[in-house]
Every structure is written in structure tokens, then in C-alpha cells.
Length: 192
Image 1 (cartoon, rainbow, N blue to C red):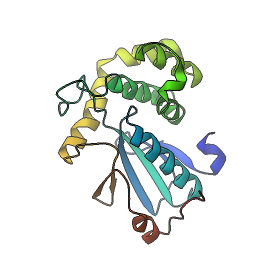
Image 2 (cartoon, rainbow, N blue to C red):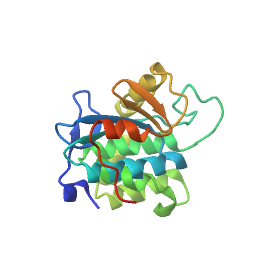
Image 3 (cartoon, one colour):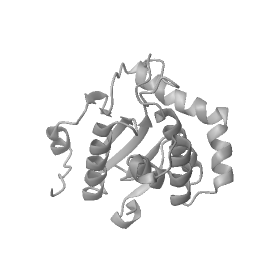
């Protein structure tokens, strides 16, 4: 289901990060996430439910922090192999205005079929309705890698050491955001 059904908007921040939710939010949540982290999947579906319940008040900004030694200098041994590729796939979907569709698909990589991460990413790109040739070119592009490295560098600057991590009003919350933070900004918790 797309955010458009909930009266929420979507776009990119001034520095190019994808957001969904309120155009003029009372609260902005910046999520640093890894598509292969089960806690991230749960936290992300919770954030999406919050945005749906508060489309005029809450904005969710997605940033990438794959815990994969292929692109993240913090990770010294293989931990989430494939996570860098999945982050690049989301960035490339964003270039075709399909970031959130791809984002949602990548949080459930087991549903994508395909034996390798490359195959899973291709399936996701097809399901998200992307131009596959443009998508492949983008995946291989050093520019895409640079864009991903900017998110990782920002996460390291903030001294994040795990996912999901959230930044709200300059405060860092690891794992989850305390409900009182939402309550203080009039954000209604979705019905369970």
C-alpha cells in the first residue's frame, strides 16, 4: 500500500534524503537503517504505521547504515553481506521516484525469491516498476556508492554503532524512540 493513500506526502530533503509523511511536520524522525536487520524491519513498519496515523504531523526520513563490511568501515568481518547492495538498490529506485516502494520490498528480502542478493534486487526492481536498464546502470555507478558512503559517514560522525538508530531533534535513540517523544509533539500512536 502506498503512502499516497494516507494523505501523506513524500519527497527528498534539501540534501537529497527520502522522506515520507507531513510536508510541514511537527516532528521529523531520521531513521538510520539496514535492510537485513530484523529489528530494523520491525521498527520501520512501526514508523510507517505512525506516519499513516499522523500524516500531517510526522515526517520520516530514511538514511542508510548497512552493517556490511563491503561498504561500512565500522564492520570488520562479514555481518550482513548484501546490505550495501540493498541500500544502493533503494537509492537507485529513488532516482526513478520509487524509493518507498523499493524500501518496503527490501525489508522482506525473503519474499523476493532469487538465490543471490543480485537476483533478489532484480526481482524487487521489477516489482517496484523500475526501468531495469537504468536501474542496473545506477547500481554499478560510483556516484551511487558515494551517495551511500555519505550516509555511512554521517552515521559514524554521530557515533552510531547499530541499527536501527533514530535521530529526533538532535537526540539519538538506539533501537526505538520512547513514546513520550511522540506524545510531546502530539503524535498519536496507531491502534495495534
